[in-house]
Length: 220
Length: 245
Image (tube, rainbow over all chains, first blue to last red; front, side):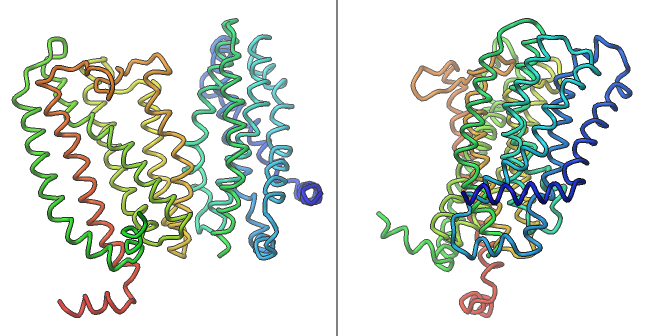
C-alpha cells in the first residue's frame, strides 16, 4: 500500500525529470554506436563482440543513472524525514529499486532488438541476450541503488560510485556474456541463466537491508 | 565468553594491548619470514618441471592466502562494527584494508612474474586471476569510500558496510579453480587430502604462510594504535599520554 504510493511518487518524479532516465538511454545508444567506429565495421567481428559490447554499455548507462538516485531526496530532506518517522524504510527502498529498473533496465531490454539489428546478432544469441538482460538488469538496479545509498552524502560521489559497484557487477557480466556466447554456438545456456537468477534472488533478499542501513548511516 | 571481550570495546585498553603485542608479533614475523623465505628460496630442491622459477610460490601463495584471510578479518571487524556499534572495530576495518590491498597486489604481481616463464604471458583473463583483481578493487573501494566523507565516522561505517557486501567475492575466488576449468592450477595444500607437494617444499611454504599471518597481525596492531590515537586525540587519556613524552 505504502509502497504503491512511493512508486507513484518515483514515477511522477521521473516523468517530470526526463533527463534522469533519457540521458542514460542516449548514452547506451551512443556507446554502442562508438564500438563499430572504434574496432571497424566488420560484420563478423561485430557479431562476435556484440554480447560483451551490449553488456558493457548497459553497465555504464546504469551507472550513469545511479549517481542521481538519492541525491535530490537527500538534499531536500526526504530521506532524513523518512528515517526520522521510524517507519520501516523497506517500502521506500523497494519502490526506488523498482522505479530504477523501470526507468533504466526495462528500456534497455526494449531497445535490445534494435541493438541486435545494428550489430548483426543472429537469432539464437538474440534470444539469449534478451533473457540475460531481463535477468541481469534488475540485479544491476539493486547494486546501483546500494552504491547510490552508500555514497549519498559523500563529497565526490561520481567516480567513487564506479569504483564501488563495478567490481560487484563483474560476476554478472561474466555469466551474462558466457550465456550469450554459448547461445551463439547453439549450445545450452540454462546453467548460466539459472546462476544469474540465483544471484538475482540472493541480492533481492539481502541488498534492500544493506540499502536501508546505508541510508541510515548517511543521515545520522 | 563475552566477559573478556568486553573491555576490548574501550579504545584505551586496545591501545595498550596492541602496544604490548606489537613487539612480539613483529619479532616473530621477521624471524619466521627470514626462516621460511631463505629456506624456501635458497635451500629447497628445484621442481622437476618448473626448475627454479617455482620458488616464487613461497611469496605468492602466502600473500594470496592472506589477501583473502585479511579480507575476512576485515569483514568480521566490519560486522562487529555495524552490529554492536563498536568504534574500535570500525577503526580496525580501516587499519586492515591497506594491508590486505598490499597483499593482494603482491599476490597479483608475483603471479604475473611467475606466469611469464610458465604460461608464456603476463596475464590471462581466467577466473582466479580476474576474481583476485576484483578483490583488489574491493579493497581500493573500501579505502576510497572511507575517505570520501567529511565526517570520518560516516566514512568508516560506509566502508564497513561495503566490506560486508564484498564478502560475496571470497567463495568465488576460493572455488574459482574448481568451478571453472582455468589455467591457474588447483590447490596444492588442503586440510583433508594428502598435499600434492613434496614435504621438502611444503615446510618452508607453511612457515612462510604463518609468517605472513603474523606480519598481518603485527601491522594491524601498529596501524590500529595510530588510528586510535588519531580518533581519540581530544580524550584526556591521549593527552596524558602525549604529555608524558
